[in-house]
Amino acid sequence: MQLPAEAVSAAALIEVVRLTAEPVRPADPFTGDSVALWTAEEAASALALIASLLGSGQHRCGYHPGWAVRAYDSDLTPALFEAQFCFGCHEVRLHGPAVPPPLAKQFFDPAAPESRALLARFRAAAAGPGMITP
View (cartoon, rainbow, N blue to C red):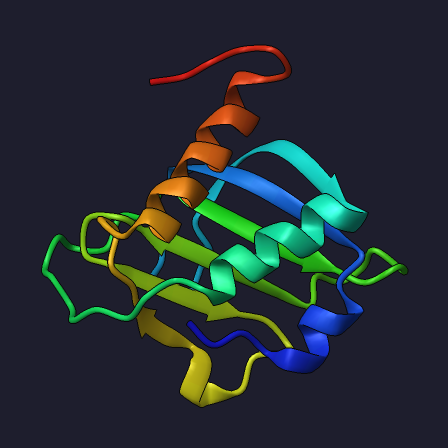
């Protein structure tokens, strides 16, 4: 998967968001609860894992992303980019000022080990410290 290289190198913080509400209007964002903040090595590791996601073809599910990450630089505002992951249709949508149009929509293989590892990180973040999720 391709991420905006300059934004990745500037990222100091990753916010993990469990998306729970669809937009009211098509141009509005998906919303949800922030479940974790990853800094330093944890943020760099997550971005490297995301960049390693294997490509896939599109599958139709209606695009219902369940998870997003928002990357911030050291100023913490605004987000450099947000990546929303739909594990049903294999689609990732990137939004934000650092995202060039060719990177805005990409597809990944949700069954690949890298994707499963990312989903496990998201679920662990939502469960909180010391908890295990299925």
